[in-house]
Length: 468
Ligand code: 9WN
Image: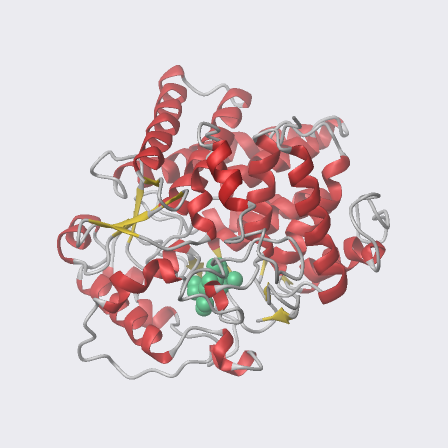
């Protein structure tokens, strides 16, 4: 379906006021942010290809341009490392100079590691593995369509399954040598929730040494620098990067000496959900019994790991600092990890927390949408990036989780409020939770992408998202 052919409003009951414009304008943003076979996360703030952004983008594109959805992921996976790692950034050689820092030169990944791809420049980190969920959506939106499209989707699945399997195997082994079921991250950027209070304790413990000079370019793209991480945080981010370079991006070296090693519950939960999607893909491509058993084992181990990270005091899951061997108490949206991982054994407690004044029951919320950090958290900040604002992609993850848990009414309210926020505020990167003010970059691709997925939800043929 091209943008011109898009129906004006798929949602019917979701929201009112400007909603009829959401679908075509969301598709238009993805088209305008598109470069050849992939899509920039935002028009100018992020000029390269980002890993989990691309997965969300592919998921949205699946509804409007299935072929482009496949090329989005194929382009990203072309830069997969020999270890199976999917890099968090694939650098765009044509990005304007001085548009984003740290740049390819600062990472020097192919010069330092034989595992890095030779034909492109990438960062040395990774991000949450939403990709298999997107591949499954591409499959779901192809089924029942014309034969050529179904055949193309089967070929795409067949070609992608081994890459996805290698990616998940990397996460289950190199990132979990303890076999805990939880993924270790080396940098707040790997979590995708960069300056979340989740990372304050381990990040503050990082002592910054002699740092090569640098200039931040991100601040020129936002109206107010307090919406972005602080300079102190950036120094630490850059210092961690120097550590990774000294370790030549070698996992064993990093595990031995890196100052920031944290078990991330949100990343781990997304991996469980992605493994469930991978298991379905394995069925379509007729993967071996051994591999299917391996994926099932990863799912069980992941759910057990999250169970061990549960805090009954907060009614949430907590990340764990491996360096200090201690949990990292913070009331953030990441704490809903078991829900996102599809484990309903804690459903009642999690719903109690979700609808308490710490989250959706907070009396000052402009709309019933989950703030990235709870307003009850002392380190909450309503305008600062991951310290409080509402991020549509995280609302999407929670929405999908509620649906899978059979909480259809709750999911519908969330979807309606989220679409209304976009209809009124546009496709911003994030939103002020008490006023609904759009913040960060305008025309953020993944915001547009999840809007397309929400609008298409009425199609009950989806298998990845089951109703009730
Ligand atoms: C660093 C691209 C990315 C997202 C992350 C978000 C932000 C980068 C930055 O932008 O991170 O990776 O420069 O702040 O935190 O989740 O993938 O949209």
